[in-house]
Amino acid sequence: MRADIVSIFPEYFSPLEVSLIGKARASGTLDVRLHQLRDWAHDVHKTVDDTPYGGGPGMVMKPEIWGAALDDIAGDGSPVLVVPTPSGRPFTQAMAQELAAEPWLVFACGRYEGIDSRVMVEYGRRMRVVEVSIGDYVLAGGEVAVLVMIEAIGRLLPGVLGNANSVVDDSFAPGAMENLLEGPVYTKPPVWREHAVPDVLLSGHHGKVARWRRDQALRRTVDNRPDLAARLTGLDKHDRALLD
Ligand code: SAM
Image 1 (cartoon, helix red, strand yellow):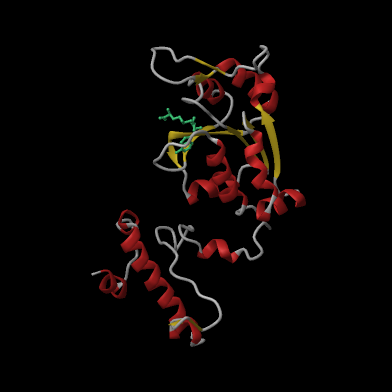
Image 2 (image 1 turned 120 degrees about the horizontal axis):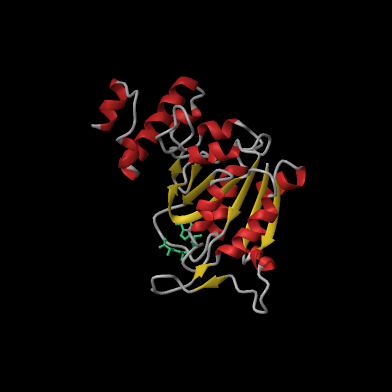
């Protein structure tokens, strides 16, 4: 996958050099290209923003600068343009899966009050544009949102995770885990500061372990995310008894 990132702070993206994403880049699975938006601003101050029409506080990013940058980066190609904004569609595991199947993404990092809305309309004529929110809070810029998205998307690319089954067992994974959070996990030693690992996990009984894990996942989902629990389907009598 190719991922172009346009930002006035490309230095925000140094974490993409380490860990799983760093390895994915080194192996060629993920080709990340960083761009300084100001390189497309030609006045002496490299200005990328201006006052908002209609008044109000803050500044808005200028469409001509974004237009010049996106024209150069996309050329005649048709990447998916991903625009982080608190007013976008919620970023979910399902969206990460969908974007991981695309060969080319361009991320446009807003700052100030965001990017002039005509940019999304203009590029929506030529390519798919997705405005995406990573949560119901307001960040100072799109850079951290893009780091979140690239990490979630990047770990889904073929060969990036050591064990592909990790993705299947994750919280929100499509299928059995779609609306379930993962339950608690444990490693050695069997007892730490008087806290023992649940006996069932040491039993070697795969059926019982699977049932226990699902029960824990259900409990955690009901406790922490009642909104997800309300969407659970395919519950059997045992599950219902657990939830009552
Ligand atoms: N005035 C905007 C609003 O209320 O929707 C907020 C602009 S915010 C200060 C500046 C930039 O941060 C946005 O253009 C966007 O790129 C990014 N941003 C802030 N919160 C975000 C979120 N929850 N999800 C994705 N991007 C976000």
